[in-house]
Length: 293
Image 1 (cartoon, rainbow, N blue to C red):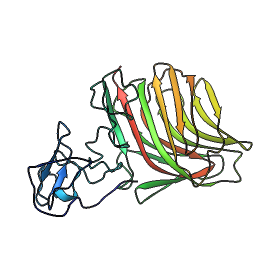
Image 2 (tube, rainbow, N blue to C red):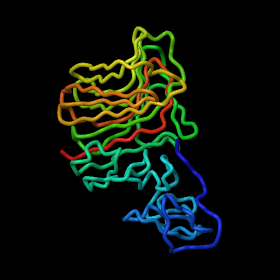
Image 3 (tube, rainbow, N blue to C red):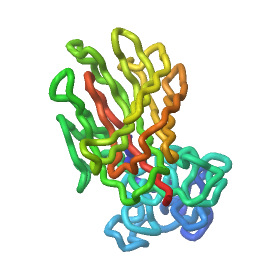
């Protein structure tokens, strides 16, 4: 869930001095961690260093536009964070492509870029497509399908035409539709250009009382059994990766994790987003990373 709060500390003014995520105290100033080299520096709380209309003490991207929200609480705003869903690891960017782990789908190959991130803090994103009912509330978006057999989806446009990409998301289950013969919740990438729609979807499925991680592509489906993927007290983090004609799907649940792989038809997705079928689900974020072909 996105965070929006004042960054000011207590004590004496120390603008110009060093600071860090571990020691962000800048007295009456704020710690600017959105510098080019990632080295924190204290700046005054008042004023607007980057001229984007956000005061320094309300701006998590003091070096550029945006910065109202900080999804992962690392004091770097979603608009300028090299991985807005997780605090920096000890070795965040091994391939030096400006995308940090764990957002980088391949830490040994450079060229990846974050092309879409949405923390659902500011309502319906411009240019997105919606099917079903979606409610934006408190840094989450809650999806409800129109009926037990129809998919509700929320999709954003992708700038690159490539089969080298990843879609990551996080969600919780509000309720399962007991009238549904199957329920399926997760992330998806689709190409609307073929006759019909070519989609690669990754998430948790429940069918005939059995739960599984399911990767569903235009050439087939690959399941992996899980104990419980529809627990309303749990959080599920899911990621799908495309590399040419190969797709992979991984899930981290509260008490288990796993992954599956499956071939695809090789279509380059034009949209990425989240979906739910047979359940009401609330998503905390969706992130898409692409690499030029």
